[in-house]
Length: 134
Image (cartoon, rainbow, N blue to C red):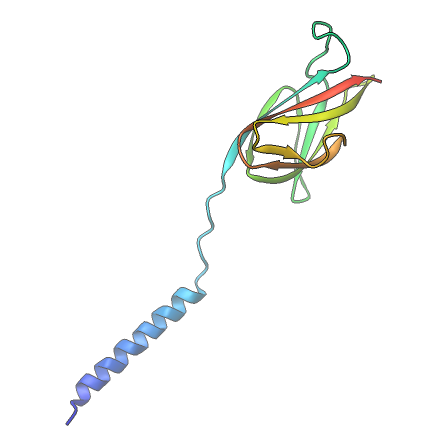
């Protein structure tokens, strides 16, 4: 003869395990921590001897997820969350944009010859913006 207390205890344990499994499966998972990197931005004039070249004219503006992150004078080191941004360079009066030159291997641009383009940050890096007289 089977002890009814043993069967009841087994049923209670089974119900408790099922309840725990359901609770764990429906609970939201904790968000992973955001990762941030330093990216250095500077601009410099191209097409003239280095000793005559203007530096750090103009401003750079970043957007993430359709929202403006900020507009910054140059040079500037920004602490950016890893991910994808839209970036645009606004040259000073009398100058025009030429090219983005990212370096460091962890910062890339979609189109180096467009003044407004995508920027992907996967690590620390540097972005030089080339401009010339209009």
